[in-house]
Length: 296
Image (cartoon, rainbow, N blue to C red; front, top):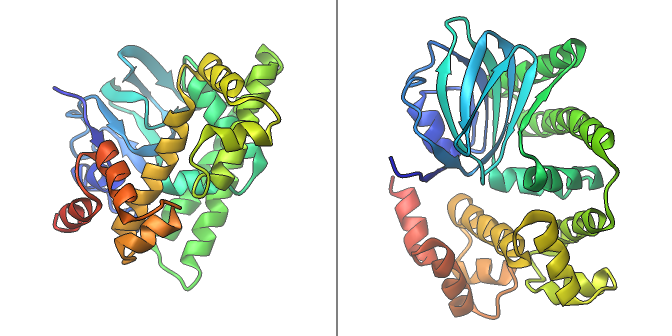
């Protein structure tokens, strides 16, 4: 089957998951009884997710490499990872947090510590980290809290969920940091890449070209370009365009802002320039994208 990119709403509909908040956040228990669990084709999901194994075992194909996980293993999935579940034991049970990419990227801008996530995603060969049992139990309790607050609305539901998300992000960052410290300290190139990501998350709406970020780091654009390519295998444009496109999709889907207002919000010279950018990355115009998504 041809790989495709799916959004959180499609994934939760496919598995008939009820613990979903505004099609941007979901947290639920995975087990052998989950609807359609045995028919998951390889997909790129436009989602950041955390899965914590609670019991049993499961085998995932991650970029066509099979890896088996067991109790207290944590898996981190991101949009450029091709994932499928190939088999699981009868007693398989896991907690799974799904966070729409646009929401996750906005969260990244709130704490400098989160800059380690993009570096981890770009460099790691395995998204699996084994947690000490006490750490796994603490993370499980917080994931269950998120699931409960999704299911039971309250006047402060959104604020509570965002606070709990930050708790989980910091918890999952801890083993990432420990792994990084175990292997080696960051090289100069990696430090520059982290600084680039921090600047990008803060300024991507207004600054679309590598020159601004290179000047902010007191290096030349060509040197920064080489650093990014060396560290991640990707271009600066990949990161800049990715954030801009994700935010454009969010604004088209989840706000009623006119397209001209969205073009202004993202600092395009005019609506035509925004339309050309969006069509180049999506294949359709902003209005067609908005109409098609809302017509589903």
